[in-house]
Image (cartoon, rainbow, N blue to C red; front, side):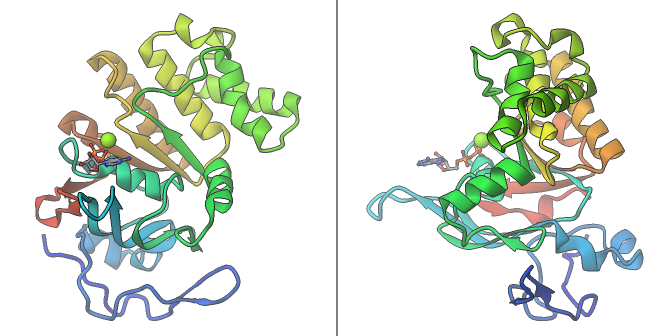
Length: 278
Ligand SMILES: Nc1ncnc2c1ncn2[C@@H]1O[C@H](COP(=O)(O)OP(=O)(O)O)[C@@H](O)[C@H]1O
Ligand SMILES: [Mg+2]
C-alpha cells in the first residue's frame, strides 16, 4: 500500500476554537508517516475529517538527562479519525505507552504537537492537561488501577464526583456504565473480590462513564488470561461499534490487534508504515 499523501483534499487550514489558524499541516504533497486505505476514505470524502479527532505531529520524547538519554519517541506523526478503532502494535520498549500517555494528556512531549478535537494539548500546563484528561479522555491501564478500598461503583463514580457531579448523579451514571460492561451484579464488590477480567471491565466502565471523546487502552489484556482478554477486547469493539467511541489500543499481541479496524506498527520510537496491515 502506498503511503498516503496530503494533497488537495483539504485546502483550508484547521482552525482552533478561538479561530486562529492551525498551521501544523505539512505542505501539500508532503508524505505522512502513516498509510491507510486511500481508496475507501479519500473517495468517501472522509479524508478531510481524518485529523479532526486526535493527531500528533513530529512527536519526540526523551527521558533522562543529556548524558544518558532514552529516545522513546523519535518523530511520530499520526492521526486518528472520529470513530476509528486503531491498534498500535510493537514490541515492549518501542514507545507505545509513551505515545499513549502523551496522547492521553498524562504527559507532555519533548517536542512536537498534540491535537485533540482541534484543541492543542502540548502547550497546556499541568492543570490544563488534567482538565482535558478528566473530561475528555478515558484511559485503561494494563494493571486496572482501581482503588482497593472503594467498591466497583465507587471506583467508577470517583472521576465524575471529582469533576463536580452531584454524588447521586455520579452514582447513577456509574451504575449505568457498570451495566454497559455487564457488571451490575458486582457494583458493591471491592476490587479484591473481583476477577482480573471483571476488574478490567470496571476500569473500562470508569473510563467510559465520563463520556470521553477518546478511549485509550494500554495493553488492557496484558494481565488477563486469554478468555478474559477476549471479553475485554469484545467489549472495546462493541463500545466502538455501538457508541462510535474512538479507541486507541496499544498491544504487542496480534490477536488483540485483530480487533481493531486499523493497525499501526511501531518500532524503536517510530511508526513503521511499511509493516501496516490495512
Ligand atoms: N519514565 C521513564 N523514564 C525513563 N525511561 C522511560 C520512562 N518510561 C519509558 N522509558 C523508556 O522509554 C522507552 C519506551 O518505553 P515505553 O513507552 O514504556 O514502551 P512500550 O510501552 O512500547 O513498552 C523504553 O526504553 C523505556 O525504558
Ligand atoms: Mg507499555
